[in-house]
Image 1 (cartoon, rainbow, N blue to C red):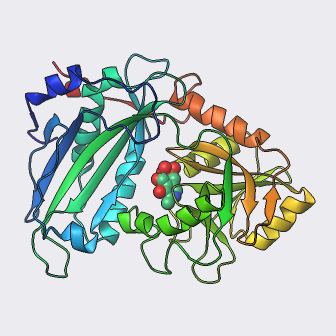
Image 2 (image 1 turned 135 degrees about the vertical axis):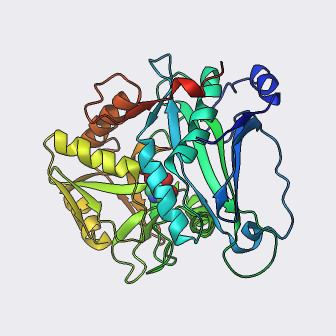
Length: 359
Ligand SMILES: Cc1ncc(COP(=O)(O)O)c(C=O)c1O
């Protein structure tokens, strides 16, 4: 931990905060934020303070070259007094993998967790408590060095902000197969959680939404034949009762939820396959009924069944059941652990150390 400071404006920010009546995913900002600077090879001391605008020079490198990474994780307080986090060490490890790819400094686990733990502990009373709700946490880092030199910087800021939220995409989803654009390049940054991957997905998403879909489904960057993932979710299909998911190729994100689902499915005795999933073969299996469910998963969405896969020409492939049995069972197992209704047999939950709570 650093010699962090707690700004006195925290108390007023928290006491005047009203939890919104409706909690859309990620739209309502939490009242406090954590930040720490990295300058010339050294991390400084953290600061927890009320949410406020940042002051950045117009030449800050992040604004020009997009040198930025982030994570998405949740603090839960359903059925429990004290907040818990779900597998935060995996978010930390992935953050550092993203940092390495984007030529940014790695952050020690204690400092990454200092920000996450302080924001969670101080916000504990405003963490929503209904099933499916949580405090969404957004750790991120950006290049704050101020010059236009086209090179990785020497000055970075790590921050944690939050948003009390319900699950992203509650209900089933309609997904458009993206046949023109790809999300990631071979050898590119698809496996890193960096802003540019998301900015470059928005045009496809807008197109999908204009056709009545919720999201785009990305195919592989080389042949555009194999399924990769959605923009913020990994992809699964149930074929003849067995669970299939695209193998990690380096161009899709290694999701914490994906990994947890694979462990839960194995525990349930379901056969699992991580492999290349050809989109045209999958469509044929949907049409023949061999593929009974497709669903996507991520921290925000948990598990969302896909009811319809669609093509640009208007063809729609409907799944037999819009709410699949296995996806619902997996969702309940995962959420049951996250919300402390079911035994945490994998030891995935973490509480916040007492030292991080206000004294
Ligand atoms: C591109 C992408 N794929 C998959 C996921 C799912 O990852 P996780 O389960 O760790 O949230 C996310 C969300 O973080 C994502 O942004």
